[in-house]
Amino acid sequence: MGDKRIQILQLQFPLRASMEQNLSMPELEEHNYTQATTWQAQPAAAAERDDEPDEESDQQHIRLNKSKSHSSLFPFTILVNGPLFTVLDFSDPFSTEVKPRILLMGLRRSGKSSIQKVVFHKMSPNETLFLESTNKICREDVSNSSFVNFQIWDFPGQIDFFDPTFDYEMIFRGTGALIFVIDSQDDYMEALARLHLTVTRAYKVNTDINFEVFIHKVDGLSDDHKIETQRDIHQRANDDLADAGLEKIHLSFYLTSIYDHSIFEAFSKVVQKLIPQLPTLENLLNIFISNSGIEKAFLFDVVSKIYIATDSTPVDMQTYELCCDMIDVVIDISCIYGLKEDGAGTPYDKESTAIIKLNNTTVLYLKEVTKFLALVCFVREESFERKGLIDYNFHCFRKAIHEVFEVRMKVVKSRKIQNRLQKKKGGTPNGTPRVLL
Image (cartoon, rainbow, N blue to C red):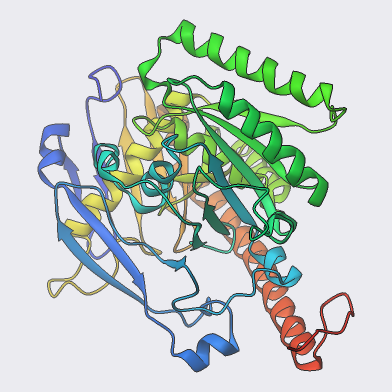
């Protein structure tokens, strides 16, 4: 972080005791702590009764690791060759409505597994160089909050759609988004051919899939080469669809790299399309900033640093990077100073708040919304003088978010009950009797 972006750092953490410090960035680097959070494993009987940990009764164990790496465990259930802690019926329409799937597809060595590890496991980009090539479908259940709630399926690059053992209809039927990763530093003609085959097959099964193309590993390209590569891939991919009479299929393209925040921003936009409450969240943010004198506001998932909503003003990449850096600083410092002497408590709770003053008369303001979500705002110093007004409006905003949260949980629970009733009756949700073998 250059001197132009930040000179004075002021943090306030009324987690257990109020504190205010002026720290330089080198001093912060010395306190490189990582947070690790794991779900308590459910008994087998409990897993059969419920597909997910209950939001009100879930238990988390926090441990602190003093480590130079940024890797940590977060509340995911890893599903490789079958479930570990939960019982999920991946062909069940009710489960796919609650947990939409995101498929990661592409040729071998295109960077699919690296993306997953960096975004959801906090692995350092340099550590991904030692990852082995994926040779089987890996499924991962991401349940950070009621809004960021989906399944990641990582497919091996050599998968054959014409293999009779590959049931692509079952997989695509419950998919919310298909991310196809293209290595921008390699010859991408074969990748474009595979993209066309994948998209056409998926669209025939499910016309509601969002097709996302990550033009990956652009960190090794110049700015002009990035633009030219994106234009060429965009043109060729859409021409192939037009020749096949599939002009109605929409492809979204993103320039990404695991060595900067572009991969987090791209994943944010992918996940936002799967959040049914997105218009409500954006409207709440617009009302909040317009009545509080705030320039820009993000609603972040603290674990993955994916922003699940922002206001209607354009997103600047540098602004997003500052927000991500602020979340890292808050978690790291609160891991050191925010816990009790015996290490009890959590580094991020309802009392978490932080203020960072930049040298360009801008203030970054972070407030806890839920145990997984944080609001990060950009405010001018003259507007921040009315902090009481901002805090009151935030209280109203937070209350509205919790109401949306409660509605979502009621919908999830009602679908679970309906799902269990259908299973007891021996029928599928559409009324077709199940075939028992």
